[in-house]
Length: 285
Ligand code: CAA
Image 1: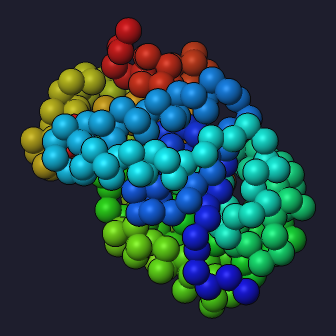
Image 2 (image 1 turned 135 degrees about the vertical axis):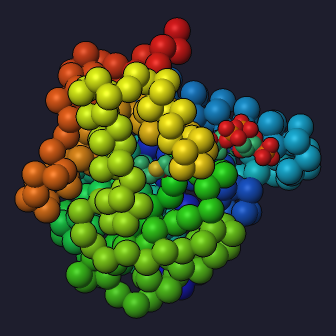
């Protein structure tokens, strides 16, 4: 039984995975950052380096802390590298089939006592846990974006998650200096259950011509004191992720109030996914 995490495997080096590797390595965990795509992995490592360098230039961390943290991260292209970890955190695309495939591939490699977490932002932890051989040792650890900045972690137990897994995950979150909010295993948990309908409503506001992109974002930044307007935030999260979460809410809660805005669907179909594709509600080219 694992009750203290030392070595962590992170699957997926995208914006969430590299952010998780960033904070874990700075908190002195040994990290293996895995991605099946070499370009993604290189990009993830470069992002960590760039974000840490910015922290050094702002005096948030020292040069030595940055070097030690970077030395704590081993990039990896093969899942075999997960054989020694205490905890694996899956941070792949918000797509259930993809996550299930990862769990089927990685569970035979893990030590039997290793814990498994998903950083899913909306999917059922109980259902994902059932795709592994250890539902008792499975938990939702949901980080917020940008991971190095945002203080919250949502912890989500599946129906079978045992107390040791929960306590160990809570200790891990505490060690990262994050604040935990515990959510029941419902579609999109708490943050995204509340945040995404707001973003979807902002897209409807645009779709119906109530305001343009700038006026909607200005309204919410200055009128509600949000650090980013909802359309800017949607671009930041990724419009494909926003749509996936709305679909999980719509299907999981069977209520038309969660119907994804047709304009959001159209943007995703066009490949306009926000910052990561250089185009969303704003143009980043
Ligand atoms: N790594 C490290 N530090 C970072 C960073 C990163 N990736 N991104 C920003 N920062 C730091 C900056 O260095 C800066 O540090 P100082 O305060 O020490 O100067 C600080 O964060 C603020 O950044 P900026 O000055 O560049 O810009 P800003 O003031 O506009 O803040 C922001 C940027 C923190 C992203 C802010 O706009 C914000 O909080 N936006 C809302 C983010 C949000 O709502 N996230 C939740 C998304 S939902 C989610 O994540 C759930 C999901 O599953 C979809």
